[in-house]
Image (spheres, rainbow, N blue to C red):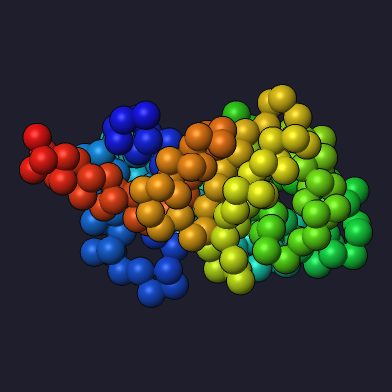
Length: 224
């Protein structure tokens, strides 16, 4: 897979609490230049990005982020606001407490409600694998599938660990045929990016991919 093809599957991400407009603008300029799948940004920047870049960018934002325990009504309000301001894709965090309590029907109902609010827009569901047992991860594969979400996503990048080969392989065995996989959290090398895409991930969330691919292309030119 070429670097261009890899970047076409990357959600170029900047979700730090202290991200300034200059940080966000740099991210967006890189995304336009390298044609990443999207920029994944804080909700507060969605409108400004849309007003500045228009159709040049596919904008993704986060809901219930990063802890997931806001009430469903709050998540729905976040979704509606984000879509109204020009967002195209939503990455939501499930209520991890409900998952740990075994309330999988409740979790599925919330995901379904958020997907209904998203309509035709893409919904990626973050289950934060670092906090879950294998049985809970499998249950979440079923919940995400049953709720009709578009993607299951490993991690926020703010938990105790990020994406792993084992979790992506587990997803592949238990999600429905219409659910895709997004790996995120700790994707810090070109080898990581290649591995997750090779495992079948349709998206990878990282802030580093553009820099890594640019360095790789530069090195290849020097060696040519």
